[in-house]
Length: 495
Ligand code: SF4
Image 1: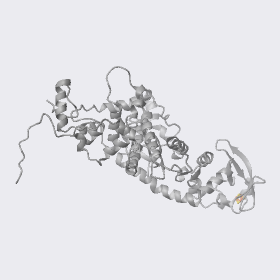
Image 2 (image 1 turned 180 degrees about the vertical axis):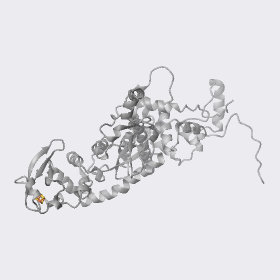
Image 3 (image 1 turned 45 degrees about the vertical axis):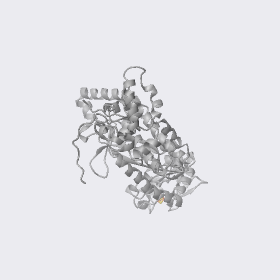
Image 4 (image 1 turned 60 degrees about the vertical axis):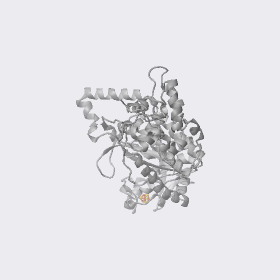
């Protein structure tokens, strides 16, 4: 027999509704809620709130809201808040009920300013440690790479600071004052000093002064930031991350990432795997001093034979003589030690200019008019050892693995809106990256850990919101005794 839809009337009470039961047992937010402890933030931000005044939205709720914002790649915080009332899973995740008041979207931006980067860094580090404790991190191989992300600013906001200084001194002063004020307000250790000394320092975005103008692939210049990551080889857990302006060379971030990996995991890496952009002398020596293998190709070797060095004798054609501390060139002439570069820490070796100029191989040996010169670092033995190691079979295998492993790590981030900064200024982009990296790690954790390790988190959670008919009667009675309506039971429509 066909059923007929009865004429609906707005209900005053819902007796057969249970928010928790509406969330499937295998819902991803249920798993995350069981495995991740958000309550740690109470302790973390305790000192950042006053002792009187308005009562704030509970910090774990704010952290969860930011988690949802990135996890579902919601376009804006306004969108998040307007969607929240009709997303039962989100409400359950936040420990909210149907009739709870939804906070204003501005609480998120206020909390970011109040908490600073350190709170989000702590959240990321806690997730990494949870992964280590679950055996998801091996710690021995650290893979590294960087990726550009677009700043939340238009190219039209870029101005030539030199012009402004010259022609619009007053307005430029106002702009600088604003920057100064913003920097003081954010009061964060993680804010890097403004970029100086580069061509980029000439151009500045008035919308996001921390972003730098970058050209990529011969296309149009854009405002960019750069995300640097260290990923563990076992389950691709991100163990170290950092954000810089787009103009920073990734090679300079190798050592900080290695140290961060050690700090977050408590494990010492045995090898560091990266591409040839990281293959600079400072990085080989840093790996040597830290006692690990540097599995990355030499930048100098990778670019040898191009530009001015095209079709000239490679360095390997010259033989070093330790006894006399000199080189012998392919024509049998001696190149002696001449001068020391204090800044770059190497010795320069040359033959007499007259010898080179009269040499029959001059055009195949050098482009310089004064003759060929060779450089030898003051720690060349250590460097040679590291370079030899970087060409081993094990290293080449790691370098091949790195290529797809790092590509995958950044590709997975795109589903969380990684390719574009949500907010302006470097410290806010760092917050975004810590949240994104933490979420990626949480997803690996949820996938591989069947039994929740974070039993403490579960224990801290409020009891399940179960309110069948029996409970309804009990709580309805309580309504008359305590004059309070249980939030978990009744949904009273507005008006
Ligand atoms: S140019 Fe100078 S360094 Fe080069 S092969 Fe001739 S003599 Fe030797």
